[in-house]
Image 1: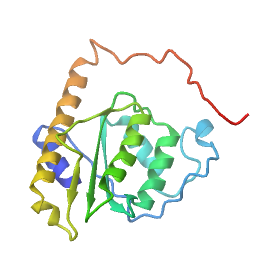
Image 2 (image 1 turned 90 degrees about the horizontal axis):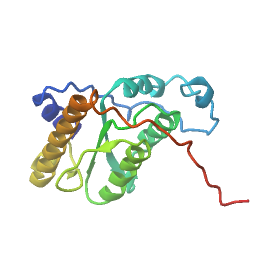
Image 3 (image 1 turned 90 degrees about the vertical axis):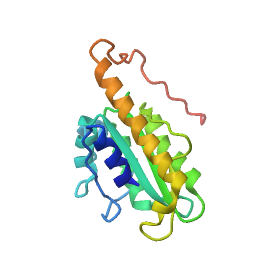
Image 4 (image 1 turned 30 degrees about the horizontal axis):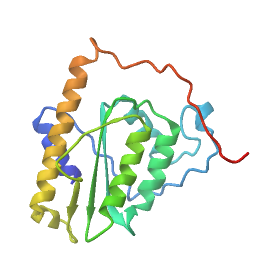
Length: 188
């Protein structure tokens, strides 16, 4: 699915770099908050800090995962928790999510990925349906006509958003953050 998104974006003249983390050893966030003073994740030795730099300089991001036990793959979840908690500047960047699965759990995984984009204040590219494609063996999603169409439409919407934001950023700069973030804790 990421390859299909990449091909559609490249047709629109947008360069895409694919970063695969599912085959890496990535520890989960331990809430040490070292990133708040270091400006990067305090845990080193995996691709999180390298991808922090990539995400900071990118105009957009596509998050994609197969479904495992009704959710995002575990290694990818650890990666995303640390990457997004570190806090790269993603406000008003364009994001998209894609999910592949054999049978069920796609909506939960799709929403789980979109939570990262929403909380990072990103603009999420739309499509005609949830960007989910079905298949059990490698290549079987190519038989999911609706899934493929949804991916293509999502990629074209992402390309349009990226181009519109780029065309307007000088005349209509992003709104400045004017409020300190309020935090509520219900335990007193």
